[in-house]
Length: 228
Ligand SMILES: Nc1nc2c(ncn2[C@@H]2O[C@H](COP(=O)(O)OP(=O)(O)O)[C@@H](O)[C@H]2O)c(=O)[nH]1
Ligand SMILES: Nc1ccn([C@@H]2O[C@H](COP(=O)(O)OP(=O)(O)O)[C@@H](O)[C@H]2O)c(=O)n1
Figure (cartoon, protein in one colour):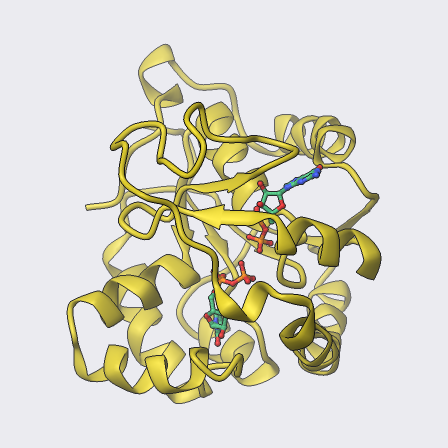
């Protein structure tokens, strides 16, 4: 077991590398990676009440309302009393941040600040394995076999709302809703912002920041624990 549980959030616009960096953090530091996008997709696939509702928003490139997100995610976080975790993509709004605040104390928030042109290029080339949420990019981390997931061999898909037409509105909306969340975490002294155009250049800074925050652990704690 880790000496102290560690709770972190990673924020950033669509395509900023939250999922990619979260996977690296999970591998290197043994935190559980909790992806709000994956939770949503699991609920959509399972046809839960929240999933059916969320689908109607995501299909139109819109944010899922706060009460749906909090109802979905907070119970999952409350179950995680014995694990250190990194939440990716939640909270997105001030209402979500306040709800999270009443559930747990965060140790750290990572905010990714990536130029628009970079986001646009990455997302138009993003391919996803819907079953697992594994993400590929035809330039950055292509699958071994074109159009197929490395582990399952199943087909990869693209999301309609990753295409440039939908992206401008998504980014504008992200900026509006994220600003007060960023201000909140800044005022708490837990916000760390990383800017750049390449994940591989940002990663060493995040890695060294986390090395100072997360106590060293026995070998057994370094493995990535898959979600239940
Ligand atoms: N070209 C390039 N693509 C990247 C880089 N970092 C991540 N990506 C890709 O960009 C896309 C968006 O990254 P993702 O981690 O899904 O971002 P998220 O939407 O913030 O979770 C994916 O296709 C990644 O494989 C990078 O440094 N360069
Ligand atoms: N806190 C959140 C997280 C995701 N979502 C929705 O879920 C979709 C997929 O989430 P994601 O984390 O995979 O999205 P990206 O930032 O990777 O594009 C987003 O495009 C939003 O429509 C949301 O409404 N609120």
